[in-house]
Amino acid sequence: MTQETLMNALADEVERGRIKTIGVSNYSADEMRQAHQILARRNIPLAVNQVRYSLLSRQIESQGILATAQELGITLLAYSPLAQGLLTGKYTTANPPQPDGARRFDPRFSAQGLAKIRPLLDQLQHLAEKYSKTPAQISLNWLLAQGNVIPIPGAKNANQARQNAGAMGWSLAPDDVNLLSDLSRPWLS
Image (cartoon, rainbow, N blue to C red; front, side, top):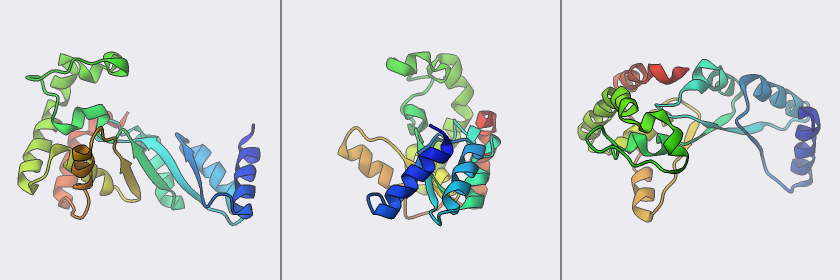
């Protein structure tokens, strides 16, 4: 199925009232721009692009996805915003994980991987203390600070859901946003 066929089929459903908005997942900047143009001919916006985005996964910035979304007014839903738990403060070199599933193959969960991200984790902990928040809340708030980004963290229980909600209703100072951006620069590519 071509992009044109897919977007027009979705636009038909909006016009029929069966769906309210159109969203995509893991679209590149070019794919997003193309979908936006197809839908714009029918006066229907592309509302959302769901992408992996966190302090440890910033490729959408270097690939132009964030800038294109901001230019076109497309909201980004950031999945895995806590990098599978790495940004929660749960895992450290002193408390290494026993990864299972896909985490077994992710080098960030190794002793070397944790050592590489330690400066970022240390800063998250420092900011958590400064703001009376958790490292996860600091990480999620950094995403909110990027503009037009909504993190969608997973929660295994009600306490985690409450913790995630604590990322809203306040803002990191611009200097702290910039500091985290600088520390996480290695994960732009």
